[in-house]
Length: 200
Length: 286
Image (cartoon, rainbow over all chains, first blue to last red; front, side, top):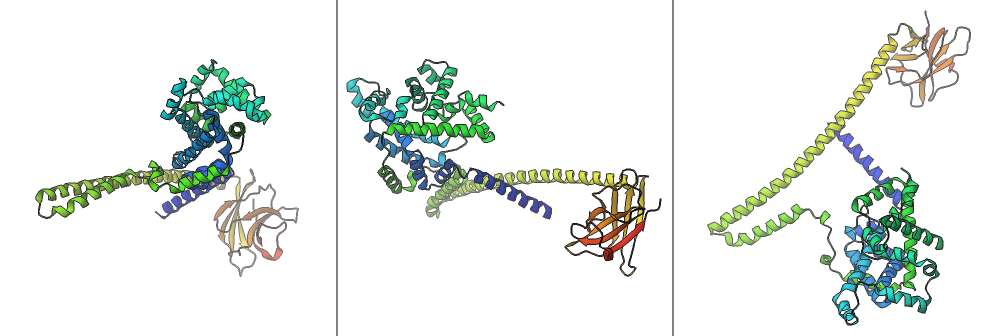
């Protein structure tokens, strides 16, 4: 019986040391830190998200809704949703950035779908799901002078990134939307990201 | 697996977009854990997208957005924050509900017999629930214990088998017709010491059996030496463990050998025996 107890104790020590090793290896990753903080309902998670992904998330919302002021409101709502749902995030199910992006994108799309928006748009008889930014963004390029990066990327690559990352389509639907075979969608997306990497 | 081809397929870009079917996403996750190149590529795709999306803001997001969001979070009540279902055991919720039922019934239960039966019913339900929870808990504990016993049994069987093999080989070596038994007698009759060396003339293996030797200190070790007939310099046959009764020496020794000797040396052994520390010696008689 004594041997049995010692063995169980040893097993626990082994499991703990293995787990610590794993934690240690990944501790440099900001995602792990944020995930842990979200799990522990620590407000620093929101600070770190703001610092590391803030501009990108606000950018995504802006690209969808088009107006800075509205985008900022949606961004704040999104941060609060992220905080409220922090414990639900599971790294095994997807990347942290993707999860954050989804919350922001869906909040922005929900805004476009909202009754107020529909009413406002019904006068103009526009489809609420046609991204406001599709129109407004092009104008902004002219008026504000956008970062060179966007201008340098060919429009078909900008489009594939927009359809895949900023809209709610499945990958098949995205391929249909762009009238591309699925394989071509994948390679075009890969090329788009490669070009981005070169431009950055 | 051709990692480069996998990366080039564009599947990782879709993974980052969360557009893959669940099984494919799971596969990417597992590969990323296994292959650092895939993990790095995913991170690099993300980094590019983060930079790209950041350009959409035209100007950086101002700090007041963070401050305002944190203030809203501070004002959220506990209930507003989504509780994780995984951390609230269902049993605890049920028990609490049932307890509240008992409390609401008990004040009016005084003389009313129907209330008393109701109370009894609820009480039995609670007891049944507690019993079920305990059973589930004990049943799980039982299975865990069974698993542990099975793994221990497996471990002991392995050790037993290894032990059996070791002793079978030892017996084969010691009873081999080429093995010569050499008794090593004490040099100083005042210090009782006795050991036996088994030397196989054919395969040159050497075993030492300690029958009686004074216990060495922590920084000392006994060392076995072989002395060749025409060479006065003893050859080391390695140090040995004082606590082990019979052991094979790490060094093979080929004949002819005139005698074997044991000396006490500093831990790790010496190149040459310390002459006043030779305890036993025995002549090889063929």
